[in-house]
Length: 344
Image (cartoon, rainbow, N blue to C red; front, top):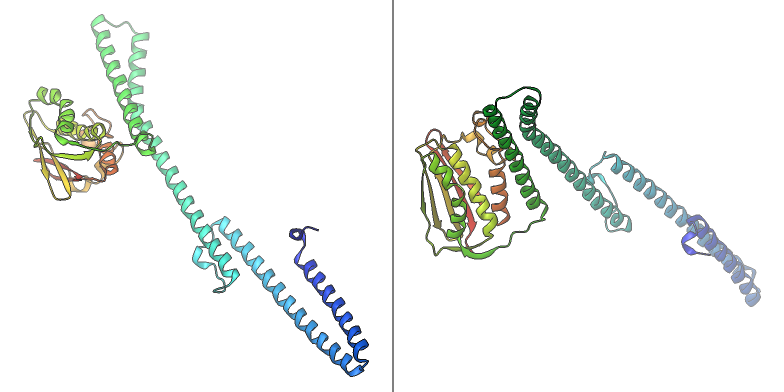
């Protein structure tokens, strides 16, 4: 018979039968050897006392097991319902029961952590879907309106061209949104890993500046750069350039015509500080934390082109390289975004 299939009651009954057989055999042997009734009587009393102790032990152990199993079942039921905290699980110190309960408590803590993590991910996913829906809604509505007008109404050739240019602008906005979301998703999920190596920061900044100089020139914005060419730190050039570009692009967008942008680099003991200062409208102190949120845009700048994901992406890239971004600003005078990268 498989020992794993034997119940506790059957096990104790089996032990009891063996003890009884052995006891009877011992009494018979004792009588045969001594032929003394008093000796046999003493043996009977000893066996009786031993049996009583054994029965009491079995009863106590059985009660302990029953109480423990009921406690475990009740605890597991409460855990599944989420009605208890791990600290409410009691047990006897330095015992087998304590060890089992301790592991159940650890299991419950892991379950709670996983539950909270899933809830947080679900909340973030819902927020992301809501944000994407909000960002996509306006371009799609504009495209539908332009398409309907072109299909249902006679439009002069000059006006038709204006409509097509407007459609192209909306398509570009959707494409930019999708590309930004793809970049963010790849970074967050680890599909793209940053390849850090020691290289000059000047060339990384130059790549980012190349993307904004034309727009800056159109607005008459002067761009001043102060960066020693020999400064080199360990960083991923492609993605760090992307982060710098997003900050510089914002500086160009929110700096009025005729303003200026200064980029200067300082080497500190532990960090390399890259500052990007503009002469734009400035950012309220209460909003400086929110500007790094995904799709965040201030109400008063909705007429300026953008989707509000650039600073979020920039911060993620810098954080993944062990750095951080600090913002200082004064309303009406401009803002300074300071990027700190480990100076290793």
